[in-house]
Image (cartoon, rainbow, N blue to C red; front, side, top):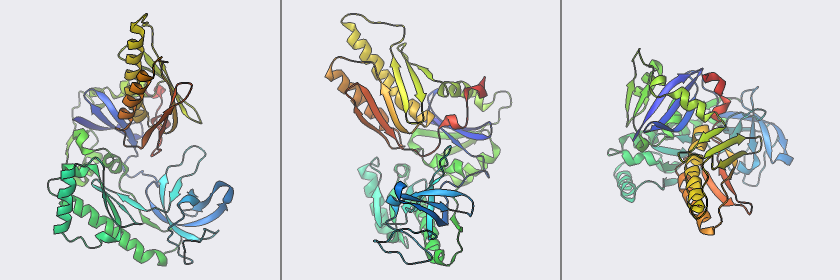
Length: 398
């Protein structure tokens, strides 16, 4: 198991999951008290309906605008009129939405009508009923949780949809899970009882401190403790999180950043060239439309019969590093990878199977699509937050 290291870099918090001495995952979060609107639930007003974009623009506070896709307009909480399944949104409608995507360059934040609350052990959805379980939970743990539900009385549990997260695997006592569920039920019940009587632009729910929400999306099974050198963050973590030890690092002679060589790791992650153990390397180029990754064999060349084995070796090392770099850099959307051309279908299948296994470790909805006729491997990755390069550059660490 690794360590979760949290420290300030410039005006952000850097959250790094270490697997041995190498970073496995990097996330950033706002400093406590400086969080944005992501995750908040508002009573918004429809300002402009754009059929050509199959969506609408909403005002969430009288100034800030957000975009809502019509594809999500099946279940709607409206204030100024009744809603039916055959209905559609109109200008000046007042509706309850949750901010699900951050503003990116010229794009406004995105909003959703699917209201969800995410905790350390479960996710609660306003629309729906019943309980589902993470596929990574063991069959034995699922049965233990089912048995615990049968012996407990959680008022309102059947009013909403719950998904039990992988982190519940570590629970021996399910009290933290049940308390989290009760908290979410209370939040949604309050929303349901009051939204029709609130004025437009009311904020019904503000998401918890961003550093907490980031950590809750990292499986407990991947790290043994959390280490931070920020006293404010330490107090928040100690009073909020359960299930893991939290330690305040206080060595004045050696900073936490230097101890874990964070500047060195950041310079690599923010660069375009990444070396592989075999001597090959990746060139990573983000563009407006997609991220392009080129795999090169480097200076080492193999000739004759051994060339097939060598190129497969380079590609397999590259597959692991591609998956790692996508996590570290937090790239999303379309990713195109140009691996070294191989002559046999068998080797290509081995490469795709290996790459797919590494991508499945990613919690951000990363999917291997296919290999094109030209040998380009297509990957898609769900956008959950902005890439690391939006906050830092290599020049920051010279």
